[in-house]
Image 1: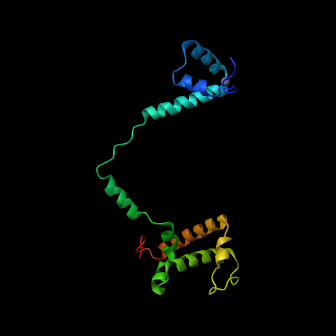
Image 2: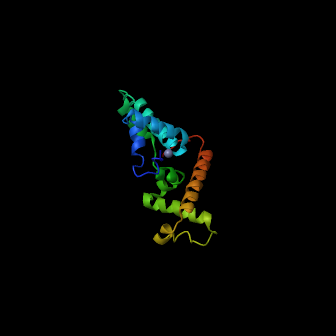
Image 3: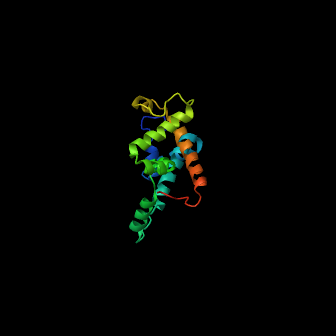
Length: 165
Ligand SMILES: [Zn+2]
């Protein structure tokens, strides 16, 4: 027989075969072909794997305290900005900086790490255009640098490693 993968009916006959909808004659003809054709074999094996997985899948029962644990976890999770700003928090609290300004500090820190000191006067800060032109790799680098700073902060203040202040 011609390979159904190449024919006009496409994969329909293979799907019908997997679903057990083909008559005996066509089914055995196709089986003979599948033995010889890697493409069809792969398709059938893939289909059967999906069907087996769906048959085996049972939704896990919801535990009685699901809601409580979910909310506890949400409480525990911290936002990316929270992680980024954590090293600067003592500074922010002391100077009463708003979060937006703190974010600018973080971004500026990334710029200063990447560029020679003095290129950006500290009091000027990055402009909107600078922030927008920040490459993804640079942003990633900044996040990594912030992670490092956070580690450093933890080393400097070991008495309160998980402090959120
Ligand atoms: Zn085939």
